[in-house]
Length: 387
Image 1: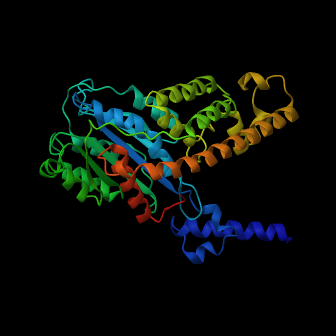
Image 2: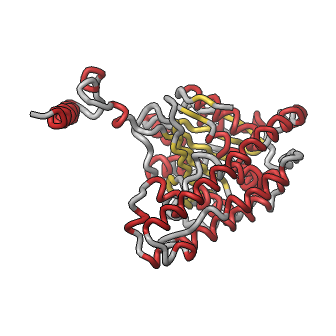
């Protein structure tokens, strides 16, 4: 038996031993496999946002719209065992009279997805309207319906924000929270109002039941965005960066249009928020592989050979295989250079902000309370922050 056959035999025996024993190989079983890293799952951070969109919640929704990319960038600097995690976000709203009573006034806008442009799009479509706010129902639905990771080492969070008593509705919040923690999901609760009132109305108890954290915010407080000398240049580079994303396939044009639209949505909350979104597009959290030919070809080079002519971006139609490969390599190199420049400028920007933000650090806004909490909980799951 030659060496190649021996290696293949040991490899298959290693897989067979694991499959016959259990789904979590022991160290001894892993030793039978030539490359254990092949079986190490990429870590995940899963965040389900549950936002109250009843009539009094305009301030909360506006804070969420203005802070989504800041939260993404905070998650994007995490690592676990040297790997960048997949960041999956789901979005629900509850308490809106446009949602049916049969659904418990709870509505899913996105399941867990790494398509952050879609999350942003759905977030900006939210509007408020009076209704019944059932926190227990919202937690129950998101716990049951979402595809939560079964890996205890992953960070799994529900973040629920609202202002009415946590006890409302037909579902006992205590049971809903117990069901969540059984899956390893921590429930972080954000009461939009007075801290002590949130305690009295059981928002703190909901968090305590799941090892989560209770927070309160002033939803009507204006979020302070600190402008820096580096912002304008980063925005200019965003335009250049966008030119390296080229839609392909049946949804390519639509997804490219969505990217540009979400740039515009971010900018509607000021230049600092637009910068945060630009920075997000330089991170591993931003995954356009399903629609951008450059990202797709890096992940699966055979796409350049297999793609039908009409599925390619207009710039690539008429090219032979060698020309396609060269074009994508050039675009990839261009993108990398732009992203590096944005990253360098953002490092200087963050240093500038750190010096300026001391007086705003205690503001009870969504970004301040969420980011501090997510950091603590990520560290508890052995994620580290590379900042």
